[in-house]
Length: 177
Image (cartoon, rainbow, N blue to C red; front, side, top):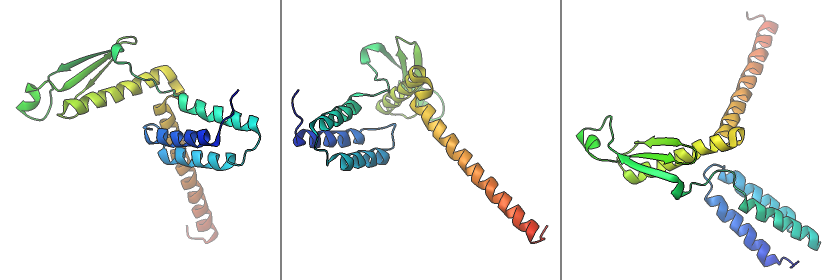
């Protein structure tokens, strides 16, 4: 087994930070803080086996991705005329994108803007989200975001209820009711 040099380790952390710039479904600041913290914790490693283990662990982080990647050969893309508000020009141009994922049969229709390129990008994002929901289920990005929002909402409600209880207790103690 080849020894991992400090230059390779620095390159790995640099690649991890570069990978963080491309994240769409993760909080970038959280990712940067986590990588920097791990770098600070691991920079004093002296045992060769620990260095090798940590290097492989961080390398696997770069290679692992649970969000599905769209393969263009599995997509069927059609352009149809749009409809809705926007006047006659919307009805005359074929800038509505209909994407079909052939293996799963999921169909996405996107006509949010007049631009065909923007509609194509948006349709692919929507299809990626739907595939993620289908494949990963409760571990999908949208499910995790919903869980996070529900937790924040529950925390807000808990704090409000606690404050209301303290306020009611104070009013009762001061005979204001």
